[in-house]
Length: 334
Length: 284
View 1: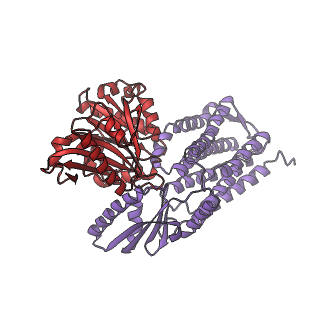
View 2: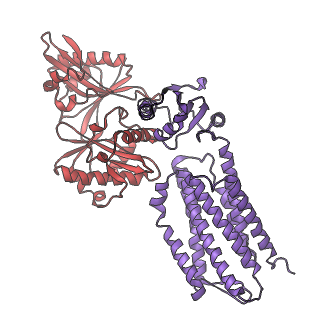
């Protein structure tokens, strides 16, 4: 048996990809979490698992001759291609959401980008009847047409666009703190190149390794998340201090918000009133710290007038006692 | 002679002397004013200024003299001296003014005697008519997206949150007292905002002065599409203004910084500020 021509390697790679994607799905808990970023990640993982399974089956069918083998090969090839285009489109949405954190931004920008997905899906569905994209030969292998190669270009454009989004973000906002797409994209790119140069396919494995890197990033960030409130925890302050020592970041004005009374209501009030991407740390016992960008105290003064209004509204609505104090603090006070 | 601080309680007494246009700012958090009167209480001179950078640790506090009136140069000298004492007590490091020949002001000589350094510059304000604005290339776009809305459709609390978001995200200074000024200060039907993810992510706020001018006070957008949103808000507000105001209504745009200047140069390439005399003085 010629190992290089054998489908065993691809099937093994796909099995490994399926295992990795399944484990990430379970460990990340992305199916249970309601937050939009997790939902997008769950969608990508699900499509990746389908891709791995379908690709493995397609390769397992190579050189097999039995009733309906041809039909099965066509079905799973179609499923595989649909899964790939879903992965790449949702990857683009995911990258954008991780950077900008805005569902509306996705809706406003990427509705148009969904059109190629629809066109490709239609072509894939009619392909078994027309052969416009590929045909399955007698050895159950896929023979591509030039239209298929054009479809590939469109698919990879999503990855290119995602990198352009990252570059644009970096240009406008500076370096990224945690989210770095390169470690995620590199395995994907390498897998695509190797798959083009050899009879094997490692695309599913490349995706899975990319998502593994993404999962590891999420874990790295989760250690700074306060499980009780969903805000950041005191460990994040230590992280920021290290960045300041390295002169990567300059200390902003810090605002301390202290609650007394029904402090369990504070996370919801702060989430409602504060800017969505504000860095807010839960220090415990109703105390919160917030970084206000720059040395302008105008924001702190504004907060002092707006937050008490929200607290007053809560008090009237719920009939519970809650008061807050807000003050601007210096480095040495932390 | 008496030096009287202008407040919301006494400004009615001096509105004829100072003018409705200038006096309307008294009561705003960063505006101060004084009137010098004779022994009978008759106003002889008056000065109103805006304090700037009060909340900014990186910049010196400055005062922009917005209205200076005096019957003669002697009164002007006394006024400037009284103002200076007030400015020093507020830790103002620098005061400046624009001498616009179209507006009443002290004489150049009075300022020079008070040790102001005078130079000729383009005004920080540009004034265009609604008709001129409507003829610009950007105004030809007819449609704006549904997430650009008129200010009147916003409740007060989301407005205040929006103000906070804009102040938080803006890399440049906005209106000094934006955090305390009431929503009703701005024209509800022609001011606009951007709604993103249920929150305000951009604002174009216009104030109508007593003389009927429309003053663009806040023009900012945050988020990924800020440049596009600025343009959309401009188009939206322009279309709204065309519905409610005549074509010869004047629109005043104060170019607070280089970013606003670049934007106005792009949107209104032919609009230039008037040549004015600008005076600066370091306060003791």
